[in-house]
Image (cartoon, rainbow, N blue to C red):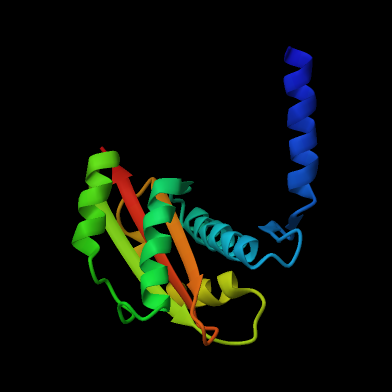
Length: 163
């Protein structure tokens, strides 16, 4: 049984390493959903790299937070809300029920352009919020990325310090 697990781990490592280029995950094909997922992971990777330079803990990906961030990004992308923090209290209450926390922060941004590396673009925008990214002792985060019909990308990042 131990040998099977080791073989499976090796296969997964090979598959994952084939998707990594310059320490950033790249999509395997042109699947638009996969590209958004890759942009989410890349953005967190870039933020963690920045935090590491400042001797801060690496943020751990939280799928629940990412799901809430995706919903908010989608709401902005389809025009339900303008770029902003609408219904933030609803997200905070939902998180508190699933992941009790002592500290919460949310950042949103939007970009449009021809760049294939939307995570890098978003990171550049969020870098202007560097004080926010560096304050607080956050341990976990979720990133949501969605696109509008006109090609604009909407990003939401939720940071949490669990209790």
